[in-house]
Image (cartoon, rainbow, N blue to C red):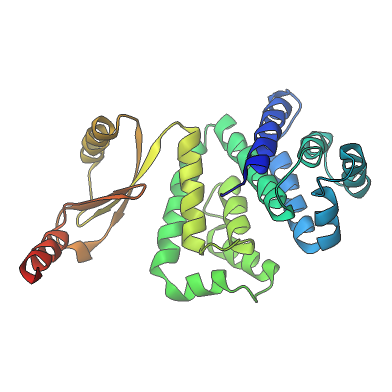
Amino acid sequence: MMLHAASREALHLAENRLGEVLGDAGSDPSAVGEELLSVVALLGREVGLRRAVADGSSDPEARKRLIRAVLEGKVSDPALTVLDTVVGNRWSSPRELVNGVESLGRSALLTSAEKAGNLDTVEDQIFRISRIVAGEQALEQALSDQTAPAEAKRALVRNLFGDKVDPVTEILVEQVVVRLNGRGVELGLDELVELAATRRERSVAHVASATELTAEQQERLGEKLRRIYGRPIALHVELDKSIGAGLVIRVGDEVIDGSSAGRLEALRRQLAS
């Protein structure tokens, strides 16, 4: 998520407030996350409200009163407390404010999974869904269709994955498909995987393997990559027989191509040069 300086500072302050709110014994991180994402949908629909709460030239207290007048009784006090901090600070644009609220909602949901001990499961499920979407062109097109009603896309996600994944996974995936924000579905899901891995203080390695890797092989590969990159690595492995043999590993923008197909392509480039 790209933010200008003012928005980065506003988001940092809101993240701190979110951490304080979710640290209270009575707060429900999942509920707060869902409420914040519902506010994202509201601000997406209501252009006037979006502009008013992001107007840095107006009185911050007036912006707080406005958001409370609209949302009091509809979302919880913890969510309102976070939104007070959001609208009480200066954002570079209304769009960046909405993106910030979305980021806070995602963070609250991942905190919920973390507290339940399910963060690694949620991360893996989102990765698996991203691979399914990447492999099914018709599904990717249906989920990326900007003209399709949001509820229809939500229903599609629920029908396909709802009873097979953690509730946090389902909510986060639905949010990606109803608010693409200039991203493709696959990219949006990959961003969520990276976000979950970052919370576990890990980097993500996307591994394509021509054959199934045993648990021991994955452990050895993870340790080798940890030594290469100097930090823990979360492996996400998919079977891809088209690479012929070996592995193709992507960490961020770096690709390690040890596949036979990759070596053949490198040889073709050498012969052509």
